[in-house]
Image 1 (cartoon, rainbow, N blue to C red):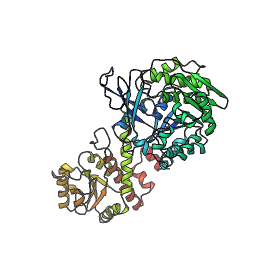
Image 2: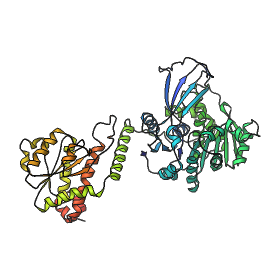
Image 3: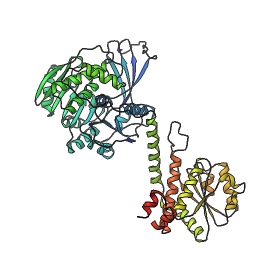
Image 4: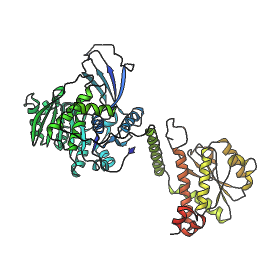
Length: 538
């Protein structure tokens, strides 16, 4: 599913998008230990937040006014809908393919000092392949002013493909090395690909523990580590986070350590992610490296002061970052505009309809329409007439189809199905054709109507979503309008099925229009008024 806006993105990212289930524990447990979880102020032992390395840092960048976009794979499940709603509240644009097995989830245990342990189930993020990145998301990457990705849950080959597309387009790149390299190699890919990803980053942001693995002889001084990592991989800059102490920066025109402002930590989850959101903002605004470190540190500090890594309250998050930031003056763009309430469901429902119609197009063949056209040709050549009928929502579809057919050269009338057995069958004469619309193909009232018109000598073309239905069996020709999903919160009300019925009948009308030699002048005679009338006179 996609939710794209026009124009350029300040930053686009691919990587982990996670539902964080946060638990308050008295301490981080070791093996064979147990403890009682503590409730949150809002009640209950679990607080659920949006999270994930990439979604978090894009969220903090969006809070600071960047136009951010996220792309990749996700699942069309409850957790995925929760994350997409969080993205929408911050105005983060989405280019997501909802084909994952499950949305990523993390179980996070936070103790009274703010320390935490995290257990991750990567789900859809780990199922992303390099070919997915190229085939589904290249256009989004090329819209970006900067590309960001991570080494955490995303397979290394997929990250490398995104970086290659960005490099080809001349787009600067950022890689967040969130896990030690040994862990990455155990789950995400091979050593050669890891090396290539790290070298492809214009800016590499490793945590201190990860940097120690990359530069084993550099000791523990963060600036020495940053310098050594940069020398090994040839990055334009390496920015190394050192927890509550601050960050070390090794770049072409600056090397130094930028200390962090002291704050009381409630939850250190995602501090490095928030740090990177601030750093991305600083890079976008062209701050010097020292001020960039200050802004990044301010974001990290604001993050640890609350439970959850994602900036759920954008106004409060921005205000706190600016309060903690002690660098040069910074003019931020306005806060992102959240979509109106309910927009997530509206967009999801639209996406379902689009996907179902695409599946229908791939499934149908010309023979299906040819059988229906042959019946209509014979009837019309012999002076027969066309009637369209349906019950419930298909009744409205039938009204539309009769009108469309009539306006494009095939005179047709609406047949009121429930009135057929009360005398309206009199509008049928032998040799006519009745087009009957029913998603289930089993509607009792429609069945009674069609049995009556059959006795009047009419032939029947069924339009149905159920090829095994009574309507399909009893029709002289059947047009498939089936969908697997309707969309909407309950998935019950006719939505996608109505769209399918309308477009299948519109396609039939287009074929008849072509066969009849219907001209623009013919259309103008039937539709002399309005904008269409004006256009038909051109």
